[in-house]
Image (cartoon, rainbow, N blue to C red; front, side, top):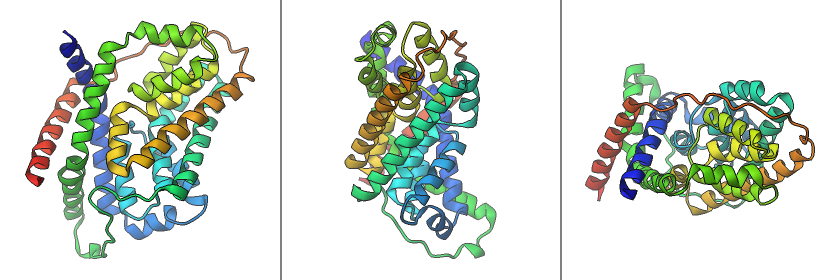
Length: 330
């Protein structure tokens, strides 16, 4: 029964992440094919804070989940972008998008929405600065300087080249970590009752801050789906800061994504990613709770269906194909 529950949890996660993982690979393929290395290096490859701020701005505009952003981050790094802006993008892409901002505003009001946005931006900024200082990444597949023979290729040839790289190389590199991460996340879903999460975060105060960071970094929930969850918790008496932590940590981190992050950028990058984002989220939550004490009880929103069996099956096909190719590599 436990194994079936874990596999069912894994399947639910596949339905939820399949679309966004394919989107992430597709965007990565287009970037690989059409965005010259020189352009990315000029925009995001320089020194100082400018590339990190530009990555924050770009992250606001890329609507992908935490697993889908990793392929995009890999191609950015391969194209000369430093690790700081890449990890910044990996936070902002899944944590924020225009639709989520609009829904958060309609659910929580202007002040809490600004608190949420500013906290995640500060966390991403701190992560980018520290990563640039201390991380030296040996990326999956190597980091190559590319010669510019692009002018002689037609657009169709570029698209085919980008898709081949994304689905024949990048997906193969990431598939084992994603499968393992999905299984671990499925086990967590099978063993941790949802009622326990609500009881821990809805009734306690001080201890709920670190607990919410741990829960947020363990479970998968997209930024749109996190808003009804936070609304429910606020309705049960949780502090607004708890909601801010979950709005950030839930979409920006999860077990599957952390395995992918470790595979793509190494152990130190993963540790910095989780620790800095957790610390900034908790400190931001405490700070904003001092200013959001009078938030009115919010009604829970209808969750809606965020998964699709079709995309779950597509993800299974991609993973099986990639794992078979991984076997041929060794």
